[in-house]
Structure formats: C-alpha cells, structure tokens
Length: 476
Image 1 (cartoon, rainbow, N blue to C red):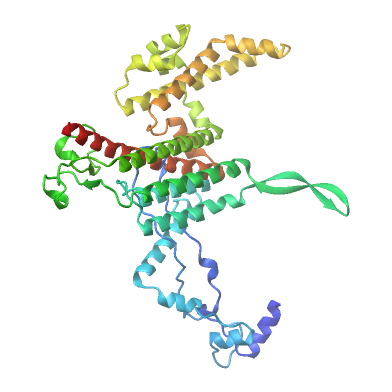
Image 2 (cartoon, rainbow, N blue to C red):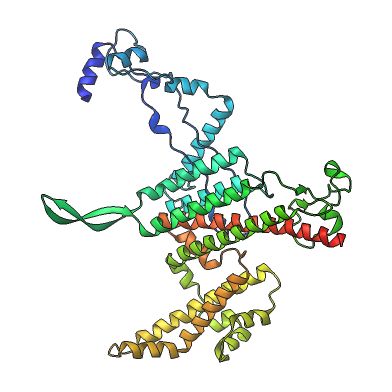
C-alpha cells in the first residue's frame, strides 16, 4: 500500500500512532560481549570464565505517545487501526509478549542491549570508531561464549540443558554471518536456448569446507558429554574425601593414591573398591579415542586457518636481525652442522621441563625461521632472472638460510606435536589481533574452542582411567 495513501487515510480516521502501535520487531538483534586484546592468548588446555547472556526478545518501552502526524479528533486503539488496515491482530501480540516478561527476563534483556552495543562499538565506549574491528569482536564473542558455557564444567557429565541451549542458539547467531560471506564464480546458464556464462555467488571455499566439519565436531563433543549420564565413577572435591563418604562408597582414588600433578583445582575422580566394570572401562576408552581424534581434527583446521592469515607487518618488524641470536648457539650449531637432522633427537637433548619453557622455545624457533626466510628471499632477489627454473630450485636448496628455515620449521612442528596443549605462539596471537577477515576469524576461534574442549575431555577421561588403574593395582 502506498505511504501517501496511508497518511491520508490515517488522518481521516483520526489515526494517532503511539510507540505501542509501531512495529518494533526490527529490534531483535542479539549482542555479545567481547574480550580485550589479552584474550587472544587462549590456552588450549584451560578455559577462561566470562559472562555471556542468553538472547531474548527486545523489550522496548511502550505507551509513550509520538508526535502527531495530523490533527485528530479522538485516539484510536491499535485493534481499530489494524481492522481499518485489513490486518487481523495476532493471538499473541507484541504488547502481550512484553507484558508477560518477568523481572528476570527483563534484566537479561537489558544485559543483551548492553552487550549488543559493545559488539557494535568494538569496545570503544566513546563511540568514536576507535574500537577493535569486526573480525576481532566476533572472535572474542565466540571465545566468551565458550568460557561461559564450558568454563565451569570440570567433570565428565552432560551439559546442563540451559547451557546447551545457550551454546546452540548463540553459536547459530554468530555462525550465521558466514551465510553472507560469498565469492563469485562463473556458471553456465541457459537463456533462450543458448548457453551463457554468468557470475553467480557461492559460499567462500574455506567456509564451505571447514564450517560443516567444525559443526560436526561440535555435535560429536556434546554427544560424548551426554554419554556420561549414569556412571560408575563419581567426583569428590579436594579435602572432602573420607573413607565413609559418598553414600558408603569407600576406597576413593584420593585416599589411596595422592595426585602428583598441578591440577589442584579439579574435582577428584573416585571409583568403587573393585574398580570399574569392563563395559564402563571400554566405554571410557572408546570416548577417549574419539575425543582425541576430534582434538587432532580441530587442531589441524585451526593451524590451517592460522597459516592462511597474513603475517602482520608489526611482527616482521620485531624480528631479530640474526636467527642465531634468537634461537641460541647450541641449537643453531645442531641445525647448521648436523648431516642428518632429527628434530626429535634435538628435543630429547634439550630436556624441556615445563609447558612454559616449551612455549618460549616455540616463539624463538618461529622467530628464527622467519628471519632466515626473509634473508633467503632477499638473497634470491638479487639473482639473475635468466636462470632456468630447476637451477633456481637447486640454488635455493643449497642456500644456508633456506636450509636453516626448513629445519626450524620441522623443529617447530615436532615441538607442537609433542606438546599439543601449548597456548598459541606470539605469531598466532599477533595474526588474530590484526586479522581483518571475518570468515577466518570465525573459523579460527570456533576450531580453537573445540580443540580446547576436546583436550579437556581427553584429560578428564585419563584421570578416571588412572583412578581405576590405581584402585585395581592396590587390590593386587
């Protein structure tokens, strides 16, 4: 219907619109909280807690009159206007929905408004447009959501229904951005009996390949947690374990074997005196193997996405001038002089004692690798372009910087394989911080949080199996 005719007709019937009669369905956007730039250093084995709310319908104020569009003789109700326009009022109108909101839902609604504002402002509360970019904001939102849903889950047990609903609902909202990230490709179309090549849009290739895989891994991890509904093992908090506790369940793991690790904040798994049954033990091992495969798949996707991200200029500018100074004399001599290079043998000789030490080594090896690559590129740029391609390849293979860079890359790969729980390196953190590709930001953060969840599940299962093994060995 034409707007001008609506205006004249409304004046004739004495129409005076109010805030309650205006369609407000366009305010149903969902907001998400964001992390600061420090949130990029996400540890693969630990979760960081933060707040993240559930999206609900917007509760805009109603009943405040708007300025009159024309002189009116008397106010007209919403139902009368809808009848005049030929629209039947719905059984549950927006006004009724807003009136039905309880105080808790209203508080959640106000929180959603605040988080949506922070999402759009990019954490710049001044509104001056100096906040972080959209890619970083969405990456932080996914990290925040994971911390809220899974951050307090430290046991092998099904996820709470409200947490599961929050994860499913809000991830759908965040991942829906990928539906509009497309690329154009030529396709053949029939027009009047002739074949014409036309450009059509399709999902971007990296999203088309990786996003369904990540969603499948997500579903499998939730199913693994749901499978631990009725278990033979249970948990006891630190310091609360006694021989006659837990409804006459005695012989707990904590009482028999002292945990000799740093996971003091985790609840202690307990098993019966005789240990777990064969079926329960078989179920745990099967789920552990499945979660381990999911962890490897998520890590591979995350690594591939990070590899496709551009290296920020700030990182290249911060590289040392000498790769030897960064990596150390002892490692450099082995990389430079070894006839048959073995990364595993080198790592065994280094005798790394902690994850922190391994991460520091990974940063130094990665910096040296790019330093040598940069030198190799600079040296080959001065070469004559008249060389044959195969001769150029032989020249690269014989270049000292090229060989050192290749060996450093192999060493870095073996280091990450030996310590899969390492947090992201300085280069990975820098890439995420300066990344501007929204699609890559979503894929990277999604793969990262699934990788962390899978690693935690494997660790929890290992704790239960270790408790079972300790109890059975005690009975021998």
